[in-house]
Amino acid sequence: MTIESQNTIPELIKRNILIVDDHPFIIEGYKNAITRYHPKEYEFLISQAHDCKSGHDLIEDEQTPNFDVAFLDISMPAYEEKDIFSGEDLAKLILKKMPNCKVILLTMYTELLKIKTIIRTISPNGLIIKNDLTFDELLFAFDKVMKNDKYYSQSVQKMLNQSTHNSLEIDEFDKQILFHLSKGTLIEDMPQYIPISLNAIKKRKLSLKELLKVKSGTNEELVKEAKSKGLF
Figure 1 (cartoon, rainbow, N blue to C red):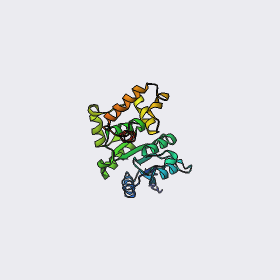
Figure 2: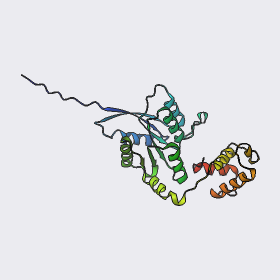
Figure 3: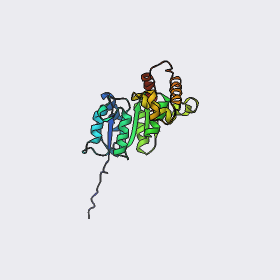
Figure 4: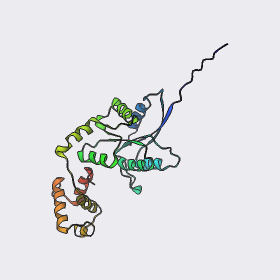
């Protein structure tokens, strides 16, 4: 009687990954790290895009499989026709179409307000300041996210820990004022849209300029500064 030994090779777990970044060498770095993650256990099918338009088109393509993890750079060339201006907008689109996808956002922003806005509006599984990024850091972040943990890089954690001492907060009326300024609405016309008096709106606008240190600046400068800090 002979017994045949059967050495079965375990089937690899397939995971679909999306990388969107406007720097090709960075995409290659991400791919290099991902493919080294437990290669005897996982097979990663990686899709890539290089700006908001190509990212949007890939996500919206009916032939595209649902992604398990998406790496998104925040600052990329916009796709204005579809109101996709950043990796944040792509993240919102992904989470709408693929709610189980884990999103890792990467950014050069080090403004506390911007970081807090990203966390509040996207709640990413991972958030990494690019200056913190190394090969090992990327692998560690990927491992945490694959294990259903959240990962915020060291600079993000440091900013959040200090946030109670130096955070800027504005309320919904201030946000509405900034929004209407960005649309070119005249101050005199704003009481039609915002349920407070014209005098209150003028005072709030002045306070916003003082808060953002653009006291003598134009409305355009105020809006630009507010957007850069993620206030609306």
